[in-house]
Image (cartoon, rainbow, N blue to C red; front, side):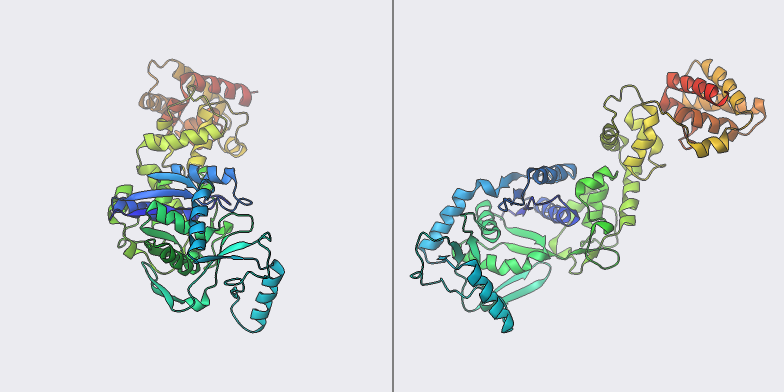
Length: 467
């Protein structure tokens, strides 16, 4: 059997942590089994679905490198197929037209709740439409079995069972002719050959209704795997204050996709005590029976730790691709007037926590800055600093080779001649070149900035601080 999984988000908002984890688990299981992964956009809610949300979902999937084998399919482009199936159900007596007014339905629910009953449709239109004119507006309902139970063995929750008497005849087509979510999902899974449905446990109550519909259509029922929710560290439902922001916000905040993927895979799945996984390890090790039943807690500090690890251990060429994206966002579209971004990564991976921070610190190597950091000036620009800058300028102008080791040796010799510590040479130079007192080794800093920019900035600092 070819395993096929799907990720089927509704584009009524951006892709968040919970959805990204669902996508990852579905993708991993398909890859682990040598199967196929399908991307499906469930956009039947026309009022709330938006193109920006669709774009954000696809951008997020691409950034996380969760490549799909089929799709993206759009439910709004499959309406002819849904109507064909609904007509078949009507003809077979497995669905029926319901003319009940909104007022009647609301009163029915109120009466049921007053009587302590679970609100559900009472089947008023199941067999008799004589009181209604065919021209009246109607919905189409699925005729749910009256007796017996519907059961399934969930890969996470175990055996789950519902009484059919607790389920009502749910609507499969609205009065405007558009099909509903619960109906479209079943037809799509059937047509697309989905064998395993991995989704959040907020869908558990939909599952028995969908299983009855699969059976009514004569479609195979997929294996279900409902994932426990993600909570904040305080045990409360995940919200923005816990980090429940869109996936692309994590990119904007400077996280690497590898770090976020590694973090998400540990939210509800484990392999012993291992914390760090390559993508290949995730694929090889991932199984549905290793998913935990309990809710997972979101921990931003753990994500930060993973991000720092990947910034330091990934090939600098890969990290540099993300750094370029951040530099572009800061307005730098032409990087030819500065260092190779890979060199920035090599020098700043140990000194920064996110790529956003790295890009901000690297700005000075690509464009001029207007102001010097006041605290750095106060601490390091003292009496005699301008004279040291002048001496450094002359020594640096005389160099034949613009090499970090050569520069470091030249400045060490200058410190000895001036009978001062290296801090009183290197720090004023950092302020002059970067505007701050925080940077890599002074030789590396000068190589990143480039000879012409370094000499020009030292001259500028001499004029500024010597005035």
